[in-house]
Amino acid sequence: MSDKKSATIAVRTGITTDSQHHAVVPPLYLSTNYEFPEFGAVPKYDYARGGNPTRALLESALADLENGAGAVVTNCGMSAINLLLALLSPDDLIVAPHDCYGGTYRLFDSRAKKGAFKVLFVDQNDAQALEAALLQKPKLVWVETPSNPLLRVVDVAAICKQAHAADAWVGVDNTFLSPVLQQPLNLGADFVVHSTTKFINGHSDTVGGVVVAKEVELYEELKWWGNCIGATGNAFDSYMTLRGLRTLGARMRMHEENSGAILEFLKQEPLVSVIYHPSLPAHPGHEIAKKQQAGFGGMLSFELKGDESELKLFLASLKLFTLAESLGGVESLVTHPGSMTHRAMSDEAQAEAGIAATLLRLSIGLEDKADLIADLKQAFDIVRESQQ
Ligand SMILES: *Cc1c(COP(=O)(O)O)cnc(C)c1O
Image (cartoon, rainbow, N blue to C red; front, top):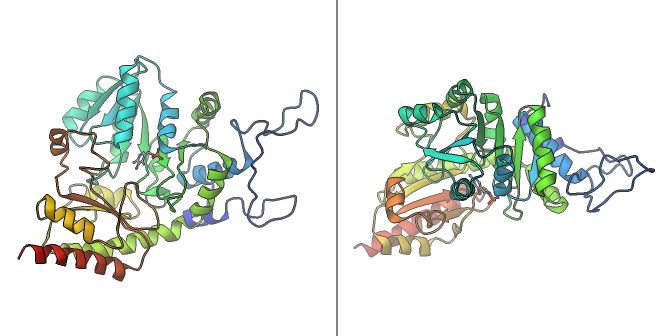
């Protein structure tokens, strides 16, 4: 636990802790194994799957940032979620959102089909459906807020209260906001998970994950399982992620500033039919987001007014926004969920989830906002000209 603000924790973790050479920035420990001082004396670190000093610094930073008892850094976001599943037994039920991250849906569904546990996907904003699901006494309620790609918001404090009354744990995937903008453990959750691949590393050059537990007993259990199943992250990626993490506070502020400017631009663009962003008063999750988030983050989605050929023309005309999956890096990205991140869903399932054919998701990076807006504007203008 730390009494410091998040930007300070992110910058300072591990700084000037090198007792050998007094390096300001902590060194990278690549060694697989560590010498036993004598027969029978197990050192703090013995083998890198179970523990590594570089990974431990990143774990300490992330546990402090999320205000948890401890963190286990894993080799990707999916393995962080999979590690949490190690705590469940075949009779246990997971209640998960119907619009969760595609990889999470696939993991829950596939493991449940193998009998590892049971899973129920519900619309967590449907009070009756949620209540009915909680009557089935789940072991774990999974929450993802804001959701991908429509940025639907779930009231974390309220769902924690309901889930705890039903004796369930609550795990929150906090990837979209980072601990700088949302701290689920402080809202009552038992676990927080991140794909550190996204905002936490922030430079699109590592794949990683983390589970943070609020209680020390559950942290110890996760740490044990992390070593048992081999889910832990490697030293080099931990070093890179800790390096990226140091600027998290500054980056999130600028993601937010750029997103606000782009939102204002999109609001007056006639070729934009709908914008999905929790900062908009018309967004159904606006009030909850204002209450539980310290900001609105760097993601937004909108629907282009047009057909498929106009959508293609718009995407081909963008010069700064890169057409790619993933999010949370310094570079701005545009994703077409229908054919990219959510292509495993049938057209009907997409329609049911509200993913329109011309829906585009933006991950707003840290380029100058004037250049980003100019890029969007010239692409809209090209589409406009093609319509005349
Ligand atoms: C990317 C992502 C994951 C999976 O993380 P990986 O690092 O790709 O394994 C999980 N949840 C959310 C919300 C994500 O965006």
